[in-house]
Length: 102
Image (cartoon, rainbow, N blue to C red):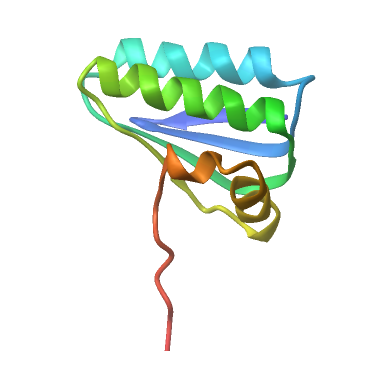
């Protein structure tokens, strides 16, 4: 998994699974500590995601909320949306709506 940042946006790419959750967790919490604004986690380039990764995002969402911030998921492709639905964790996370182009 590759992780990069641009201000309050964290870009994840590759396979987001149990092997990469510690690295992603550290990056997410570093961003939450380092900025006084809301955090966006961009998953546009995530090819696969597992339940462990989704749980990490759910816990980080809850922690951000406790600290008075929002964590929003952006760019959720079909595989990510499917896992959010199956796990029912989409109910506790804010997923940015995709715009439909004409």
